[in-house]
Length: 533
Image (tube, rainbow, N blue to C red; front, side, top):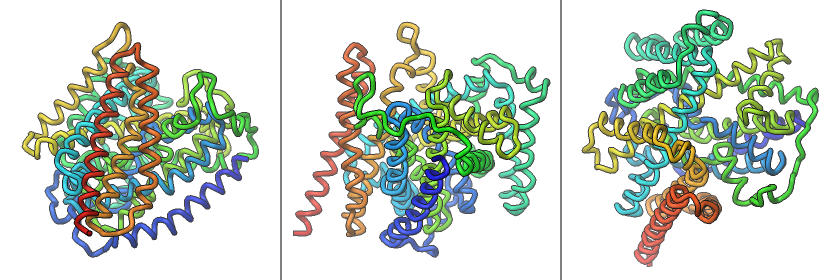
C-alpha cells in the first residue's frame, strides 16, 4: 500500500508541476529577462540575488517547519489515512502551490515587499494595516512556540544541539566563501555538506558532545534568542540564506530515506484504518478540522509571508518562481505523504506524539538501506529540528519586516526585531496559573494560519483582477473554501473556549479582523466593476 500511495503521489504532483505550474507561469507572464527587486535593489542586506538551488533550499527549509510532518500524522490518526492523503495531493497542487507561487510573483512585482503592500495598493491602506496586525500577531506566536520547541529539543538531545549549533558557524563560512571569495556553489557545497553530515554522526556517538552540550533549557533559550536576533539583522547572504541551504541537504536526505521506505513499503504492515468516520470521539467533524490540522502539508498562510518576505528579495529571475514557489510546495506535499506513511505503520499515536511517530518510522525506513534504526531516527529528528529552526529564524526576520512596513519603514531594524522577540519571550515566560500563555493560545494558530492563507489568496485575486486584468477563479475558488473553513473553525474555538477568555477573545479578534479585511476587498472589487461599466 505504501508503495502504491508514494508512486501515485509522485505522478500526480509531477503532473501538477508540469501542467498547472505551466498554466500559472503563462498567466503571470513570467519573464526570465525582467529585472527583479533582488538585482535592482541589491543592498547586500535584505535584497540579494541567489542561485535558484540556494533559494529553493532556503525557501523549502523555511516553509516546512514541523507542519507537513505533524499535521498529516495528527489528521490521519483522527480521520484515517485516505482523506488525509487526498487533501495533501489536491491541496498542494490547487491550493498551497497556487498560494505560494502567487505570493512570490506578486511580491516581486511590488518591489519585493510583503503581501501587505499588495493589499495596500489594490485593496487599501486600512486593509493593509489590518493584515499586518493579523500576520504580526501570528508570527510572534510562531517565534515563541518554535523557540520553545527548539530549546526543549536541544535540552533533551545534546547531539541535535551540537549539530544545529555547528550549522550556524559553517553557514557563515559558506556565505563568505561564495559572496566574498567567489568560490563556486558546487565546490563550496562539496566542502560543507560532508562536514554537516559528519557532525550529525559524530554528535550521535561522541561522549564529549553528550557532556559539553548538556545544558539547561534557559541557557538554550538565551542562545536561541541571540541567534534569531542576529539572523534577523545580519545580511541575508551571511547567515540566513546559506544556513537554510545547507540545512536543506539534511532535509533532502531524510526525504530520500522516507522515499526508499515508501518504495519498499510493502514490507511493512499498514495498521491504520483508511477512514475512521466523519467525526472524532470528541464530536469534531472532518470539516473544518481536517483542513486546519493538515496545515503546511497542503496550504499554509505562513508560506505567503516567507515567499513575499525573504524569498522574493532573493529571486534572481522571475521564472525561478515556478521551481522555488510551486516546486517547493509540491516537495512539501511529498514530505506530508511520507509522514503519513509513518503513522500508517504505527497505527496509533506513539507516546511522545507525532515527532516520535515520524522518528521511529524513519528509523525503520533507514534500516532498509543499511543505516542503524537509532541513527536513522536521529537523522529524522534532526531534520525535523532543522525545519523548526529554519522556520524560527525566518519568522523572526519576517516579523521585523511586517512591523517595519506597518510603520512605513520608519522603524529601525534592531528595534523592530527586539519588539518581536520581546513579545515572543513574554508568551513563553508569562503564565496563567501553571500554563504558559503560548500553550494556552497555540490552538488558535492552526485556524489563524489557514486564515492568513485565505486572506493572501484574496489579495492575489484582487491584484490579478484589477492589475493583470485576467481571470482569477483559480485563486478565488481556493480562497472561498479556505475562508469559509477557517471562519467556521474560529467560531468553534470561540464557542468551545468561553471558559478561557484569552483563547475566545483572541479567536474573536482574528475573526473580526478577517471580516473587516474581506469587506475592504469587496469594496475594492465593486469599485473596479463600476469603473469598467
